[in-house]
Image (cartoon, each protein chain N blue to C red):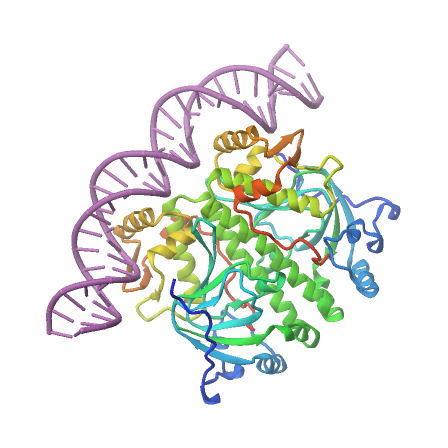
Length: 258
Length: 258
DNA sequence: CGATCCATTGAAAGACTTCAATTAATGTGG
DNA sequence: CCACATTAATTGAAGTCTTTCAATGGATCG
């Protein structure tokens, strides 16, 4: 629990900043194209870029903080802790994900956000969010899309935790993160994607104990359906593991990027 | 499983329709005020009103259907069924809740929506949703707010199912629905609110078996913390049950109404 | 009055958690 | 460069929460 709260280290020279127009994420088919004027607006909306180390608490639970981010590079997760110390990971955040919408609904953040890896983030001032709706209704529409899409992911997590067996939950998590990672260009030539999470993270995301997570994951890895080594995940037979997990396809292409 | 899919019975004479301006929900402090011109827009946006009987399937899982509704009166729930027949209730819908945003994200609806009681709904044509963003950015902003708020509720359900004990989950569900119902004016002079759900619904929402739900609910009701009779719920000691459930306050006032 | 839905309860079985302890890997300070 | 602390993964064993199976009673309905 020695994590720092956002020291807000901005990226030094403007040279280090990524111009929205040349944002590497925009080249992916995962994201829908925007018009030049929309991208210009986003560029002006953007107030800076942050480079933060792994384990940084980007948002403290209950903290008063209204800032919006887009995760450019790196992984993070959203979580909530109960008074007995139990932590539920609500979802994982990957490049392209938008952070901070919910915090606008109440004074203090209903959940925490922590980085799993070092990360690069675009920062946006929340006070100007409404300008976005006013000046570019299509971007406002996009923000709604993003919010609804994120809910679909949480819905699916809820279905997992509520109805799937431990083995299915783990399979589901692996397929889900594999696909999301692949969709943002993280799949290497070896067909593997990075999976920068510990078994404790899995356990907290799936509502399982660490021990049971370990035993069940081990059982899954003993088959040749998938492989998890050195923080990289490879799914050898997508069909089989999807059926095992009772996987339900989520829309991952053509989503908006702010 | 003999539920009909939306027969789309529109309300007969225009006399039966509720003019948005005089919408009874707008008088509640649960909802934020809108300008005259916003309300006018919503009125024009609205394509009709439906009166449907309990148990109607408003939205079939996997169905191709793009329609938006606001629940005016009555209760409903959103759910997803796995291939083994297990059903997870994702959340409950109460008056004022907006229905159908997520369906825009993929061709077929990722979940079903079923009515718990007979209900009155305002219908909106999805094709014109973008007009709303263009003509009234503030309403677009509201729609995002609604989407984000709904996710907060699902987040909380996920925390319950993932981390709370059976007793806590049930307590949590009761407090949560009690507060939501009360916030939309459903609390009677006796301090009780309607709770039109069976124990099977509770079980499906909480990821518990029916039997265990029954035993645990029984255990809770044997205390004098709460009372559930004839489909009405009364919480005698809100503080105690909130502590038991490790309840976390959700923003329930001043939310937008479309 | 039989059919159906919902609630209830006992008992046995099973999935998952907790407790406890070990190994491996990595980092830190002297 | 080595001792020591820390983090993560792993495994066995015991205990408990939850599920499944089975059966009953009450209420409503045509």
